[in-house]
Length: 197
Image (cartoon, one colour):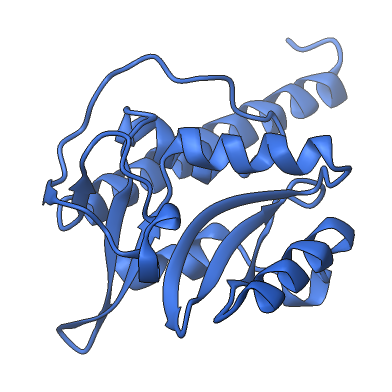
């Protein structure tokens, strides 16, 4: 017979919450693996962010790798951490295609983990500690739409970057250093990622 039923109830509730979180993690990981089956992978050390019009280099079908990954900020959205862990190579970009009505509609490039960390560390040195860039899609005339993580809320948001001339690019950089992402414009990982499933 239980001596303290309240304590037993709390223990059982904690176990149920843990079981739910574990199941949710497995579901999310399986969704990422499923989406990556249709993905393309760039060649090692190619960074589309350094190319004219953000052009991807040579690509091949995605294949998971198992290399040692550099340290990732603890506050990065856990699903993005899963994504980079499943990719398994910090030196490759992955191209995801947004599916719409059985047709591929929009490509997103998940930056290599090394490129994302390089951008993040550069921002931290300049005083911006909330933003971690993850992926982008080309928006035309030198502009890109970036998917970023707010490291305070752990949610994702879109922002524009690049530009058609040096003035626009410099203005975007200055705005980024003081950017406080609006919580109202943020969303969860699955709200972005469901388009690739």
